[in-house]
Length: 113
Image (cartoon, rainbow, N blue to C red; front, side):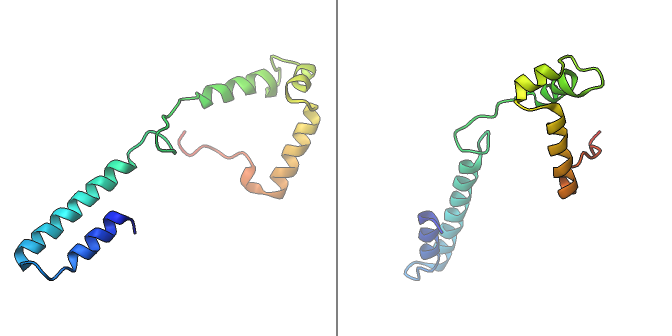
């Protein structure tokens, strides 16, 4: 519990003040505390203060497939080896071993499409 929460908790159980007035102040404090928490959680990314940057992942995936992994790729196997520092056959062997060991990594149909 943070300091504001502790202050509200101790304020709620303060018996020194009038019941009606005390009840009203407790409600105000809770509403205020909740609004502060809501304001603190509004941000544009997974880290407070960082903004979301659209990296166009779908387009980049499409380009990668077109350039290296379709039946007639734009770049040949020599270019693949230069880019990824491994033979294409080694990449496929690693891919198949990972998928066979853990089916989670196998390609599945997109449920949104």
